[in-house]
Length: 300
Image 1 (cartoon, rainbow, N blue to C red):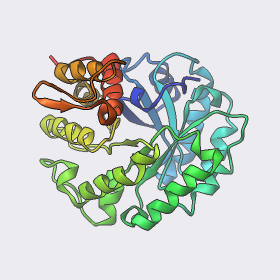
Image 2: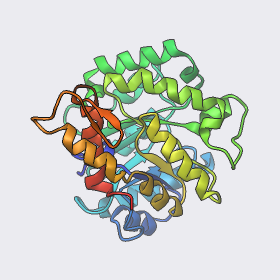
Image 3: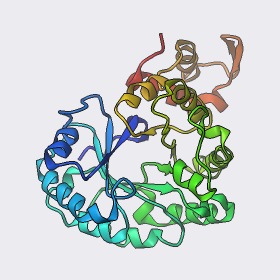
């Protein structure tokens, strides 16, 4: 299992429909194909038609025993519902998976997923916020409180994913391929979710950018994701991976400031690169900047 790694190691998580043949799933899971992937999500949900579901489950069942421990990207399965989670947990080789993406999570259905997990396993979870309840702050508060209180969930949550396309679907809207998600009504929802979850210890991962032919839009969107406190982003095509992770590189000036902020003897307040630095309020930012630099490098 590789799940000792944290959210910041996810990078650009690529969705791979489990309808792909066993050989392809194994090659991707072991890092033989797309060796630059940091995390992969084998999908049994929206990327799979209902009439192809059993075939996709069988493909995954055949592939799991051949995925090698401590090799390749972090591996997750996006299940379709609690029953499918139960089926996956009974598969031979499931210990080679780091965890599960739980779709369309609400305060009402969370318990049905958690019921399949036991203290004997250590799978990480990434619940996805993508239903009409997301537009209701009261509902999000209920979900957050459940995640905090339920021991089966609290220590397993790697991050919460935001399902941008599903949220747009709720509004009967589709994004303009020349504009970022923040130019849609969902942009304001993302900003609100950041305030409702991040201060309570739950990281948020940014939604997919479906505009594969507009790299400049993706680049802008990653920058805006980071400004909201989000980290990690779903990719739907291998060509998006480098663009997303280039955005995770840090500005050398930020890194310089971060290193000085965390020094034990740093002044309470000091000026650097034309702005105020205050360790009391900037330490969490500084730690993230240094970790990002270690993993993704610096911008040139």
